[in-house]
Length: 198
Image 1 (cartoon, rainbow, N blue to C red):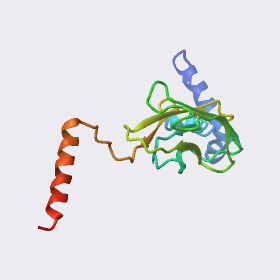
Image 2 (cartoon, helix red, strand yellow):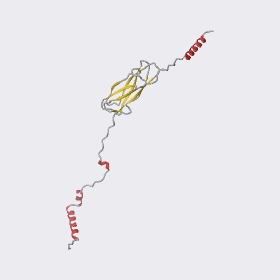
Image 3 (cartoon, rainbow, N blue to C red):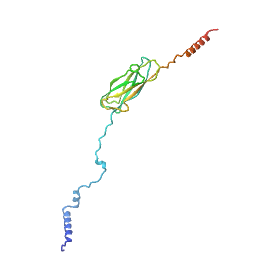
Image 4 (cartoon, one colour):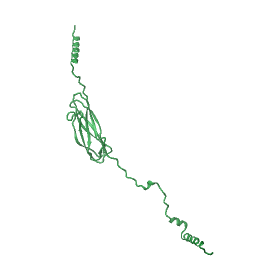
């Protein structure tokens, strides 16, 4: 066959394919080929974000107690709670006052300003504020308690203050009035007169 300009490139391509076929079998050629890249989910290429621990928050809760008579040993028991068990002892400060309310420090209750400790592994403690009873009929009185400066964690924004209510249990005193006095004397006179034998 006479080579022409049209047949020469075709023969060269046939010879190249023959060399490839002779040099490696189809199975071997397939085994040497790189594995195809298969698309997967986009998330599979992203690292897993680390878990963020929940914050440790403290809250002080409202309390109430019946006042009792003079000399009665009553207390306002304010509970302080943590949002989760703490891993080490945590100190915090508890203050009490009246902030303009009716309860008078030193008269109606003993104010405190002290450091308390929540033990490791616990989620709550109770702080007691002594209350002074009396025999005076009066309105219920309020004591304010607030929490600050924990060693670990933070005080919850809306839970750092609590109200303690002292419930009055004394009977109201009827004010003296001349009319009521006369009525009492008249009633007493009628009782005495009716008991006199005739």
